[in-house]
Image (cartoon, rainbow over all chains, first blue to last red):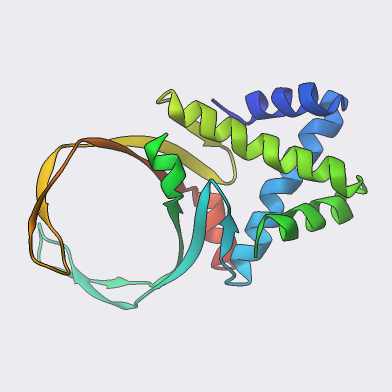
Length: 88
Length: 92
């Protein structure tokens, strides 16, 4: 399934035009992204929780050559599915 | 942030009534759920991919009591953030 399939479902349920449905689906994911950027967790009942996890900076090694490589660190989005979901 | 905050943001950004915005948000996540229930992968460009992984049956322990427990095989939904999303949250 890709975004276009979600768009057509939204179109069916709401009766919006295809273009408009595309816009609102895009905006839905944009809202989530905006929350992530502000390090906010997003909790969607019955679906799951998205959390931002900080990754540490550090030094790693290329296992093949033994060279030292820097690990940049940064943030990552983690998803934990709702327990209701798991059973389903 | 909860679903109602997402609904509010969507309603504001798209100038769509809140009720309809709620319907849209529900439909988006319900359709992802449905696809995953049928073991279908859901790929959302610019965001990420949802996939179902099969976990094998295994023996585990109750961390509280130390008792051995058998865990049946089960399916777990996974989310892998896309490159664009990773760059977005890291302000790259």
